[in-house]
Image (cartoon, rainbow, N blue to C red; front, side):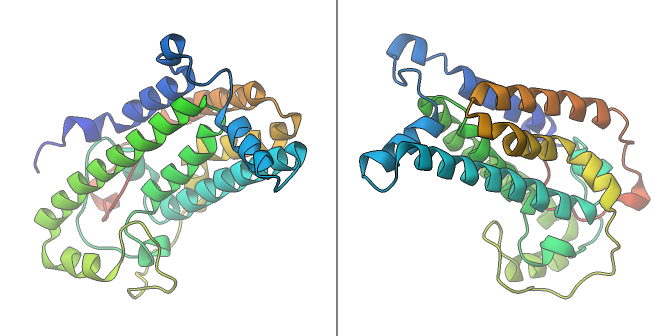
Length: 251
C-alpha cells in the first residue's frame, strides 16, 4: 500500500485550523473589514436592505437556514458512516478492498465531504464575514484536493470495479435515484451516531441556543461538541482487515 499523503492523514486538524482562522479572522485586526458583523447579521441586513423582510424576520430566516444546514449535515454524515465501519471513517489512512455501494453511496460518491461542506455553511454564519468567505473557499479547495487524492488511490487499488462505480455515481451532487444496485450491507447506526457526535452537537447547539440570537452561545456549544467528540474518538478502535471496505470519502 502506498504511503498516505500527509494532508490526508492530518485532514481533521487542517479543517480545525481553517475553522479557527475563520472565527478569529486575524486579518480583520489590520484591515477592519467586518466592523464586528458576523455573516449571520450581514445576510440578515442584506435581506432587510432589499425590503424583502423585516430585520427580525430576516435574522430568523438565516437562523433557520443554519439549523437546517447543521441537521442535514449531521444526518447525511451519519447515514454515510452507518454503512462504513466508523473506525475506517475516522482512520488517518486510506482503505479500499472492494467496492461496496450502499446507503448514500448509491446516490453520490462523497457524502461525507458533502456533509462536511454543508456543516461548514452553518458554522460560517457565526464567523466574521471575511472569515466566512475565507473558510468557504479554503474548505472547498481542500475537500476537492482530498477527493482527488483518495479517488486516485482507489482507481489504482481497485481498478475496473471502482472505475465502473465512478462512471455511474456522481461525486458531490446527489443523483435523484440510485445509480447502482444496493450492496448487502447492514448499517451500524449506533456507532455511526457516536462517531458523528460532533455534528449532532453542533446541530443541537443551533437548534437550542440559536433563538437567543447570540452567536457566542452557539460557538460555546460548538466547542463543547468538539471536546466531547475528541473523547469519543479516543475509544474508536483501529480498523482491522475484515472491516475494511471501499470508503470513497472521509473526514
